Image (cartoon, rainbow over all chains, first blue to last red; front, side, top):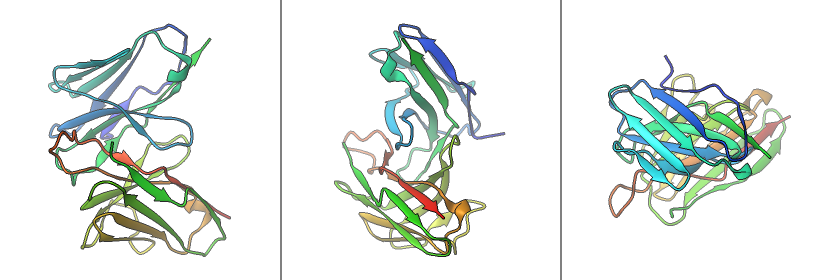
Length: 111
Length: 119
């Protein structure tokens, strides 16, 4: 079983649509959770951290279910600029712990 | 936010040559840096963890004699791809995270990546 698994994608949606990405992780000891965004041929950039209580940042909402080892990202009112690959990422807590990446889910928003 | 700088961003070399990639944390000290590799349409795969002042820890399947890592200071780690071959062509990305505290969230900051093409 892969450490971090994501929806295979790609997701092709029109502008204004709501889209949800799911992710599961295998290591129950994981402590930190993130969604990163990666544009084509660029390095990943942090989109948002994911907290146990769930958190929202504008049009983006992240949820974490530790019992099910499940993470989600909801994007409302999709914009053309949201087109990218979204990476689900988990890690331990210490600074010396690497992040483990999912394969990513590609989102394409069209007009 | 924290900045990680990576150089060179792009390199093309002949098969059999060695290539060195530098990774610097510009505004924080990093006792640990991470090197990832990403093939087209694949996820980032951790290659090794670079530890300042000690040997790097390599992931299973990554040849330590081929991918030499040196972390000589708290702000610099280097990855040298020795005797590069076409199958080593990939996107190499370094990363580091500031020590927790002072509002740090554990976020990992990435260099811009180095795209290696071996002819």
